[in-house]
Image: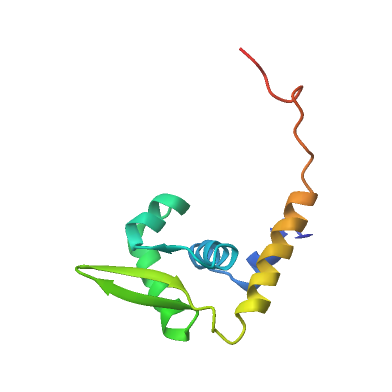
Length: 111
């Protein structure tokens, strides 16, 4: 669903980096990674990611575990609204994908 050019999650989670992080951890609750691994995955600056990871850990959405000099983040499946947030993320992405035309082999230019 689009709202004047915005996706539904854009309205509720205004930080682009935080939104990307929430989507990854909500869609893949068994995902574990460190800041640089996540930066590579979502193509964002590690400094911005680290700031948002700390915020999400502080509110309880993520769990952080020190492994040597690295902190590994994972989803807190016991977070009070985890299931609801996961459902919102999945529905939002389904609606976004439903609005896109399906690609066919004729859409792809072969060289």
